[in-house]
Amino acid sequence: MLHIKHRPYGIDITKDCKRGEGIGEDSSCRDWKRGVAYAGNFAVIGVIVTIWAPIKEIATFLAFMTCFTPLSPLITNPISGIICETLGWPYVYYSHAGACAILFTLWYLCYQDKPENHKLVSLKEIELIHKDKKAEHKQIDSYVPYWEICKNPLILATWLSALANFGCIIFIILYSPTYFRNVLKFKITHSGFLSAIPSILNIVGKVISGYASDKIQINERFKMIIGNSIALVPPSILFFILGYIEDPMTSFWLTVTMQFILGMNCGGFYKCATLISKQYSHFVISIIQFMKCLVLLAAPGLMSIFVVDDTSREQWKNVFFVLGIFLIISNLLFCLLVNDKPGSFTKITKHKESYIQVPQESDKNGI
Image (tube, rainbow, N blue to C red; front, side, top):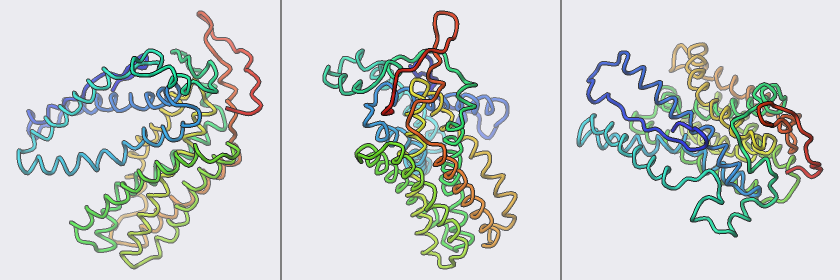
């Protein structure tokens, strides 16, 4: 969905079924359009969390709205397999195009930029949504101080934690079937089934961490340190251990545990990005989501550097060590810099045709 003025639009309808095996210029164009549509979701998450989520439910909103990465293949892969075997490949594309059209129509009919403009939202719900929010949360315009945001140390540490976390999550999604099959010697059919379990538990971890972060009543900064450390440190330790485990089932359950814990990221860098960026959280969270795209490019490169023979446990061990070290370093930087106060760039706003910096309200207690 392409996000313009907070209302996404656009439907991805592929033409592969009409092109047979040809994948020339048309395929590149379609991939570009799919990328634009996918990227639109990134900013939408930030906008909805900022405008629609109550302050005390930000992490829960983030948990449900960021489940699409592990959830989508769990839905589309088995359905595509059934359709392909029964109706043929063209209908796989037709069905996905139809689903896009239906979901887009529902979104267009249901979504409003502001809660007070939605006819199904009561006054009581509007009061709940806006409780403890400041003007910046309610007013988002087209201006974003990109450079000021991008040079903020805490924002950079938040993005680094996201890159490390997503790097490990997507690495497991992409390469766990290969590791299960070629190193642990699971059968191909078992590898496919077993590789779906970590993705399911990743979603469970997201929901648990988001709900716990919102409900536990302690200092917000301390909560974010705990939340980020839980999502990054235990998986790093498990990566170090995984390279030395030879028993197939033990290795499998270590992988499942890692994916579950990695999913518990909504109380850490995700929540921090929203709290410190306020009216500009749509941009900050869009970059967090963009990290997934970077990882899709970086993961094959990492594999090509360290793993020449994908049946060699020793070569896989090198990749596990790199990922484990990356998780520890990124979490350490985050914990040293994190706070729950709005960043200095949130003082920058648009005034008529010029951009000026205005004094920020006293915020001794944070958000």
